[in-house]
Image 1: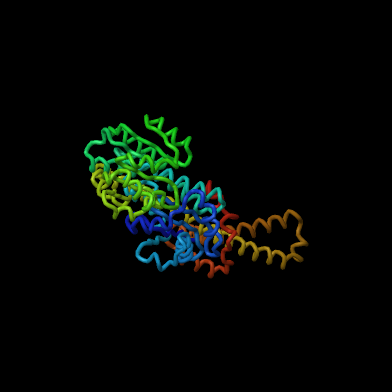
Image 2 (image 1 turned 90 degrees about the vertical axis):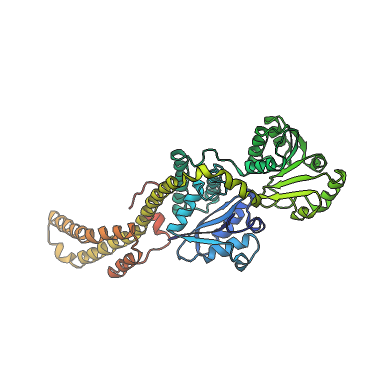
Amino acid sequence: MHIAVVGLNHRSSPVEVRERLAVPQRSLPEALARMASHPDVLECAIVSTCNRTEAYAALFSPGAGAVTSELAALGDLQPSALDGHLYTHCDDVAVRHLFRVASGVDSMVLGEDQILGQVRQAYESAHDAGATGPLLNRLFETALATGKRVRTETGINRGAFSVGSAAVELAKSIFGDLAGRRVLLLGAGKMSEATAERLMQSGATSVIVANRTYDRAVQLADAFGGRAVRYEQFEDEMAQADIVIASTASPHYIVRREPFQQVMRLRKMRPIFLIDIAVPRNIDPAIAHLDCAFLYDIDDLNDIVARTSGERQAQVEHAEAIIDQQVAEFVKWRGSLLAVPVIRGLRGRLQRLADEEMERFGGRLSQLSGEDREVVQQLVRSLVNKISHHPITHIKDYAAGDGVERLQTAVELFGIDHENRDDLAADCDVSSGEGI
């Protein structure tokens, strides 16, 4: 069984491509069910954040074409439309990629803590949907443990901040001082919460929160001494705001060009700065072409993030060493799974031969006493164990290393039936390692 990941992130594609494949939490069960229904996909999980969408799958064949096509289908696209934007990793490389993602090493904000929770949520969603199985369960559980180790044993998240915090740094670079500035937050999720906290730390004295769920807007505003408004009132608030930071889960633009033009007329063309950190984007990019409207999206935060990552960058080598160790342990465990059906097949093959011979000589054995027949049966069992011991030892060694071809040779040499789709689950308790 093979592991594959196909995805795109902030380095491989711009936000206008990433937003096409973004999967909101409410749509995950449907997306997982569709991917899992593909005949080549045995298990799957989808990690979708503002900076990446990645599909992980357990497959019988090493090719990832099925995952690519299903991922493209999330955005109603042909796979060719994503040429140059997608990356594909298989087996050990795919394992390492997920461990790096969970550790914050692959994030736009190096060492950020939010990604670990996002990976956990992605795994729990896939598990609850019945889309994962023995292989991906172990993969994601080990990835989460790896991410926790990296944060505990290194300083990679020391001084790290979120994408929302980077947005505030951008606002500070524009205004210099946020004191007295009116800031409108569209959305009241975790990203908005981190943004509001950094805004208050940076001296903002007026924070207004608009959210579809008004109670949540009130809760966030109260936590930071701000003011909540009804969602349908946010355009009125924009007429007075200096900075608008958008971070909602809406799949469509909530700030559109035509209504925004009316807002600008009310402002008498006084400049306004809009920072869109949502994926899919919340603000129509056409607004950037309007006079006195200065629009930035999540990709514009890269320079700010790069300037803050120097201290954390020094911890990457230590983090990579931990990841190397975790990958090696997972690969060894995964290799041992490959041995299980081969060993089972070998033992079964030898036992069947022994049973056939016992049956063939059954007439003669019937003349023996019950005690003597038991001695003969013990002799046969002992021979089966002794004959199988040496090849089983080598089969385990082949599986623990890079010996898939040698395992196939053993299957052919001993006339072992090829493994079927149920062997892995039937022969191995993946949580304890029994059956290895």
